Image 1 (tube, rainbow, N blue to C red):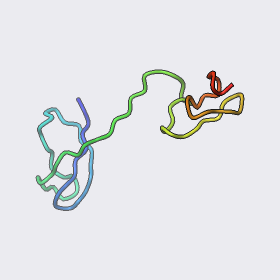
Image 2: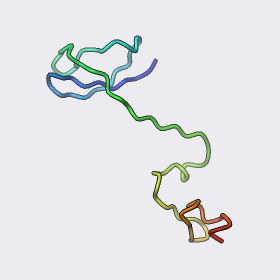
Image 3: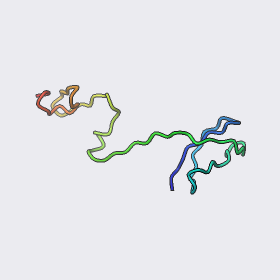
Length: 81
């Protein structure tokens, strides 16, 4: 069962809710209004590598050799050598 994010149009509260029916919009937990809408949520999936590899895109990470390039950020590819 997925957890969706919602926003209340009456009080502006954003909240998460576990729902059984994906088309259902639960009432606001703050003001109890039924005037809520589902928000688009960003998801992040990690499919391999180490925890150190799981950083923000575009940031450079340091490596054991102390150098990195824009191509791999790992410091051990042919262009970093």
